[in-house]
Length: 91
Image (tube, rainbow, N blue to C red; front, side):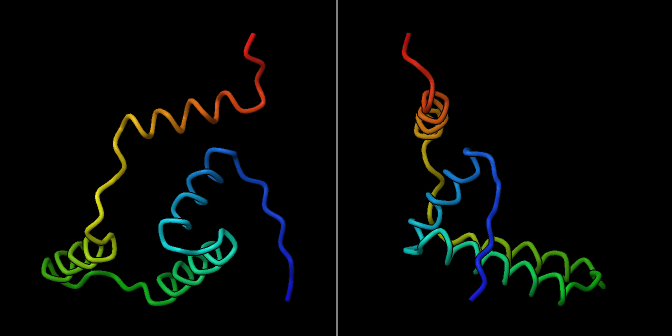
């Protein structure tokens, strides 16, 4: 198996890890799954033929998102502030 090294912003890493954990996956497994999904979508992409096709596309997006609600905005701010404090002195 090949090993790939990624250089990504800390904020992205934190978001990816958070989502991977929500889905019960490791970061590595989540990134592989995300890459496979993107590849599959790109290979199957076709233009919309009608307004109904477009509506079905958005319904499929809604189904894919699931029924979970997004984290509270204050939780987002806490994560942002934690990231900002990481590595900085408290003086």
